[in-house]
Amino acid sequence: MYPEYLVEPMRKELTNVGFEELKNAQEVDQAIKGEGTVLVVVNSVCGCAAANARPAARAAAAHEKHPDKLVTVFAGMEKEAVDQARNYMMPFPPSSPAMALFKDGKLVHMIERHQIEGRPAQMIADNLIGAFEQYC
Image (cartoon, rainbow, N blue to C red; front, top):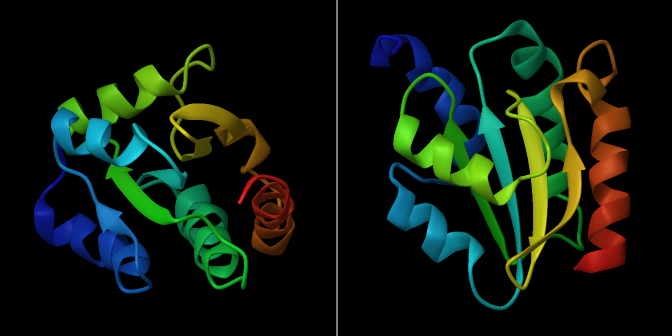
């Protein structure tokens, strides 16, 4: 676990643009299950989250066509919520940062850490936007 004062600004990068932070398994279940689309961002303290993942998620969320819900869990902080989100992301291995799009409770698009590292934020955002156009 990281000190809260350290991760708070990283959380706000997403919550300030409309992402809801999920802190336990029940909140994750409520967000993902049911009808509609939801983007889940597994946030992280790593450099590729700061330089690539969070900026990409913010840019994609601003697109006119986007998921019904935007949510985030924070790796290294709320273990229960992160573990539950990762259960829904199976068969993909645990990864942070990561982004998963769900439609009607089913995983339809996944971006893993290896697809985030070393790629420009706009390229990742364009990947998400393409998925939003297809599924949202």
